[in-house]
Image (tube, rainbow, N blue to C red):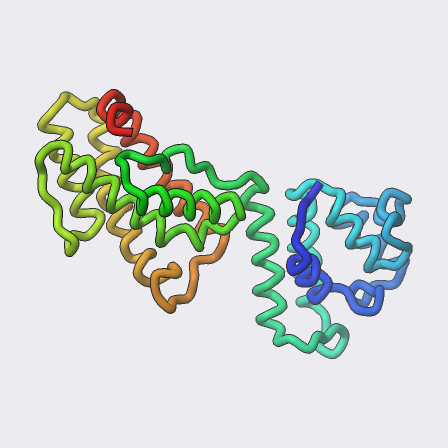
Length: 260
């Protein structure tokens, strides 16, 4: 079963439904299309609890089917719509806007209904600002808005690596980019202990990842007036950075737990 917001249901309606009709389908071709494309009997009683019109049956289908089935159907319907003359199905919004809104819904559903994991986003010092920052990140994550969290997650990462370096007596400055702090941390860690080759490689690769994250934060997040990363990609970036922080936490082990 798929949970959708009103704005998402409206985006689906705008893409495919008009006055109870779905695109240019007749009852017969509607049933045939669903059967041939998806193996779904759209005339079945289970899709009629909102009403018998084609539009209401599509709404019911979206509501009760699993996310992967719904997104497959929405993508297939959009491909079918693209084959139609522009005069067959028109909407007051620009076609690009209709597509953008529809695929934002698809991306959100395909990224998984579960909220991003924030288990590595925890306090590491007594700092009211840090607590507020963590709360904001967790709030955006729980709301399914990873793009909104990317800027704050960057700030958290800056603070986190400054803290880890400070514990080792290594200075940082405000002009220092995130990947430079990560690079300092990796060098310090290598000097402290023997790391497995794969662990060394992961840490070295992480410097490049955090460098690219700087660019995302500066040019594709809410930090500035930017075009924002699409939801699916934002979720991937968010999850990757959190996974890196989780790995750092596991390597730090006792040191991290005492500081938390």
